Image (cartoon, rainbow, N blue to C red; front, side, top):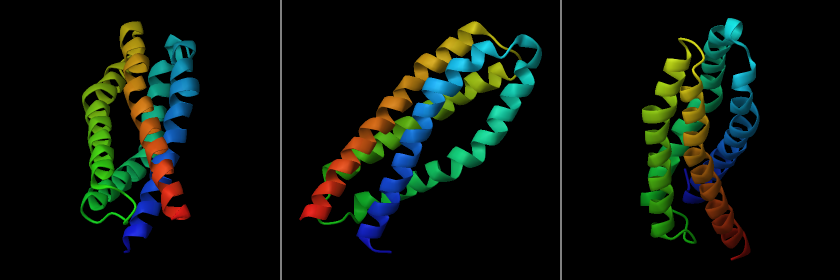
Length: 147
C-alpha cells in the first residue's frame, strides 16, 4: 500500500471518528441523565454493545495507519506531524481504556451521577484530541493536494 493511500485511509478514519465523538459528546452522553433509572441499565448495555462495532474497527485502523505513517509517510507529511498524531491516538486509547470504559462499566450497574459527570467531562479529552488530529490531517491533506 502506498504512503498516499495509507494517509488517505488514516484521514478518513480520523474524520469518521471526529464526527462520531462529537455526536457522542454533544447528543448521546448529554442525554444519559434523562433515560430514567428503571431503563438505564438496559440502555447502557445496548449502548456499549452497539458502539463496539461502530467505533472499535475504525479506532484500530486509525492506530495502525498512524503507526505506519511514522515510518512511511507521504513526502509532504513531516515526521513530527506523524509522531504528534500517533501520540494523540495513544492518549485517546489510554483515555478510552483507563477512563471511559471503567465509567461505562460502573454505569452498567446503574446510573450514578458522579460517574456520569466524570464520563461527560473526561470525554472532552478525546473530543478535543480527535478534533485537533482531524484539523492537522486536513491541513496536510490540503498541502499534499496543492503541491
